[in-house]
Image 1 (cartoon, helix red, strand yellow):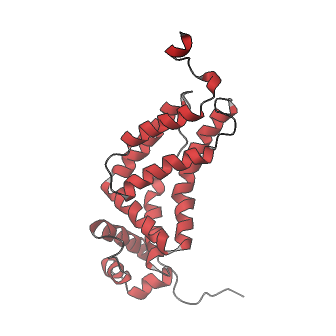
Image 2 (image 1 turned 30 degrees about the horizontal axis):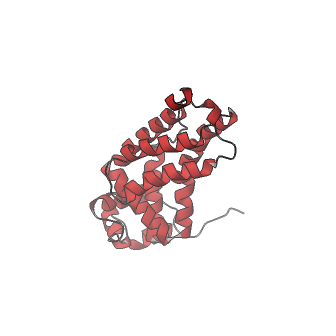
Image 3 (image 1 turned 180 degrees about the vertical axis):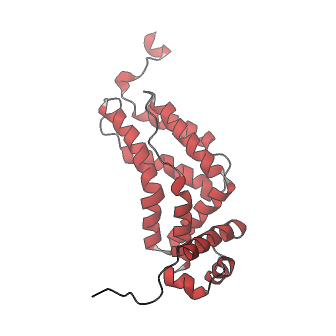
Length: 206
């Protein structure tokens, strides 16, 4: 017997209109002032059309923003053999995307949506924070496998410090985070580098 689903099938066109409307409204307003009614009106659909697809404002905002950043490739830092330089290059690349006013608004809205919903917080990690963490961890693992880091180095703590600082600057609306992160990366790398690989200082050689 053919399985006949109840209700009308979802329309890809309506989905796109709703997600586009959500992103547009977030840029012109903010997450707190956004409403399902405003999204529906902007998309040219009924309010129930939105609710049939997403259970809450947080849910539609999360999908709108996560699909918008899908084109951002979060690849591991290049391996040039210089860990600090590789991490700084990675930060510069992603800071340029985050510095875009639209991207900043979207990240702040996504953080607000995640605070509203445990499910959306998990999606934020899966689609954005998680891939960024894995990218940096991959480069750190290469360094650890070369015995270039101190024994027992907490790689997760290094990643959290870098990504946490990046997101802090976006959420707090601070200026270009590259300035702070460059110094932070130098401190982190100097602190975890295997002492046997460090160049001797002038005091050591005297």
